[in-house]
Image 1 (cartoon, rainbow, N blue to C red):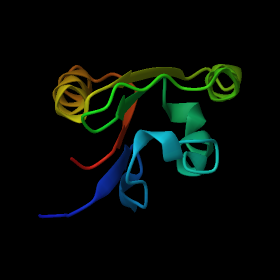
Image 2 (image 1 turned 180 degrees about the vertical axis):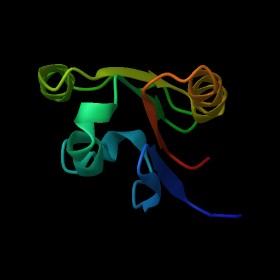
Image 3 (image 1 turned 60 degrees about the vertical axis):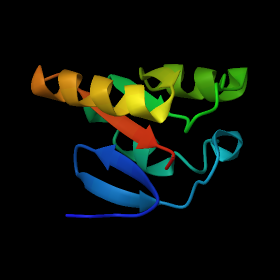
Image 4 (image 1 turned 90 degrees about the vertical axis):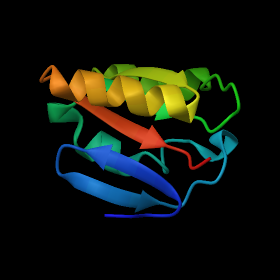
Length: 98
């Protein structure tokens, strides 16, 4: 399978994600994540090459549904997501394309 562009990797599938840079990530962009909150403990966010810190409102909204957000560059995010998934952890990934 091949895909160009950003991806949301969730327990219910892998979805194209119309985000092109980390600054576009907000509650609306993560609507599918919030919809799957009952089966996600950690959200790995791949931010492209940029370093990004989520706004406190987004972090609080995720905390309210018991999801921890962990932003990092996309290459590291892919590796971390695959390791956590292999360990059977309740993880999702939001990956900004590089």
